[in-house]
Length: 505
Image (cartoon, helix red, strand yellow):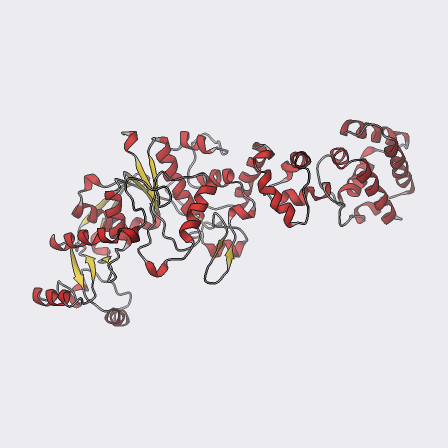
């Protein structure tokens, strides 16, 4: 394989949020290209202007930037095969559609939308194909003179591929092996629409040829379109020019029953988009993984493991490790169930692996949203190191550490009161006096003095630790209690003990 010639592409339509399945397609393209020192191209397929959504194209590139999957060529980066937006390439496609007509592989279809609607009413599941094309208004049923007249009169038309009635088309897929199709099962797809825009089927083949794409990764939902695309390659450019294909397995609902959708995420309470997407028409925002509190390293790592592994049992991979170890042979044929708890596990693992300095800037906005002002970055770093093993998502840092920055709003005295007695009360009264006289204030000395006092009162430290924790934190959670006391300082520690003792009286 000549590495320097590897060229892969991701070709999204700018119609809305970027589904995690789309990002995984980007990732597998990217990994394959970088492993072979090739080029990764992003081409915007906006030929269906009725589905165009303002802001969606920029959103796609924002998502890729967050993930660290930067294209080598795109509408943003430019490149030797510009333009990379199909609507700007409109003039290119018609010549290829006309070439297909000249060769007898396509035809003009003049049927009006009303005529086609009538057909659909009369024939259940009507398809424009080798069985029905002879009952329709097209250049196969009209005389050449009539066809020329209609063209001269600018009668609206589409150009359709003329699918053979009963041929076997073979797709050699890098994941699935050899897949055979009977052409008689495919309809005569439109290639060029009445507005002069190509459909996906024509545009993807022409652009892949002109942009010298060598390998095409796409979701398995495109497999039924393979015979049309293979025939277009055969008719226009020759099969030896066609990219090698890999149809990626679907990302399935958590129960494995069908493809994961945005609706599933809304129903089950987890994101399916990379980043927040706000519909410009409705104003509704769909939550993304980024805003839910995922690190891009974890998101990318999680996606790689949906349908692929390296066979070693390793699960935590950096992007560079994925580039080194990725192999198409290790992509599964079957769909991969999405597991949100596992996704959070990946994020938890990355929070532990990375230094807090790497993501502290991403955590600060969550504190601000909770009304907590951070004035000391060094203190914040220290606190985050203490609590990070208890955090799965970035917002968890606020929940797990707010008491380091402010007095707890609620003290869970109910968890203390049941076993509270006069001896314990007296212990904490004396603890306050000792703490007031303390000349050193660190974890080790605080713990030593606390345990010595407990022994003097003939109390087990275990009986006192939970009340002490609740006094400082407000509840039964948080890191090592003496680390907390050392961090919040003498005044806050004493104040919180006094406040809880008053509540217990």
